[in-house]
Amino acid sequence: MESGSRKIIMGAGFLAALALIFIPAAGRAEEFFPPGRTGIGFRQAFFSSRYSAPTELSLKFKVSDKQALSPYLGFNLSADGNTAWGLGLGTRIYFDFVKEKQIEFFGLGGVGLLVGSSETTAVIGQNQVSSSDTYVGFDFLAGFGTEFFLSGIPNLGFSLEAGLDFSLVHQDGDNFIEIGTVGQALNAGIHYYFK
Image (cartoon, rainbow, N blue to C red; front, side, top):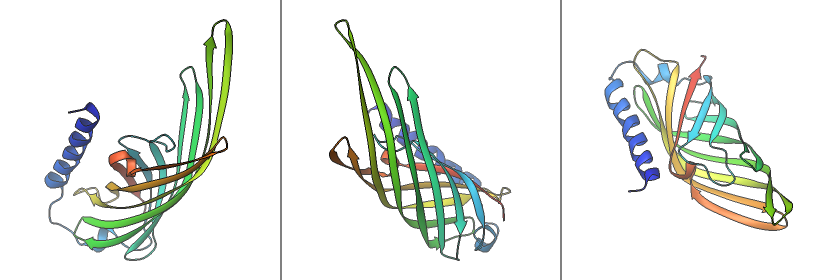
């Protein structure tokens, strides 16, 4: 088994174990998921694609009893001999379809804007050659997930998301399509809720 697959299985198993151990049947769903509740946090992809950022900073607004909006900002910077940066800005909408006492299950959809650039420097013979690539595109996603709260910590929500991700990118005169899973397998997130 590849180490990447092993990380996915271990991460999902760990979060499932947390959910089974720490979510007792206490409290009402309305206490954890009321309309008007606002959270701030992040989502972490277990793996990132060529154009998406592995970590997204996000807000989450519970706009009704069954819907939430989550604008996000993701960025990627590297300077390992090649200089590269990427930025993702978008929003997700969540539709709750099952609410339990401290856990909810939802469907989600989202759209985002992707921009970035990379500069590569190579030495060929005695000459130093540089090339620069820029890209701009759109990211669309659809999927499902869950958010749960641990007993005794009603303001801290833990989430898992999975689904399909479709990116349409224009880079140096060419169009590219990238289709994959959300987070290249799974996204995990934490949000702190103020209300």
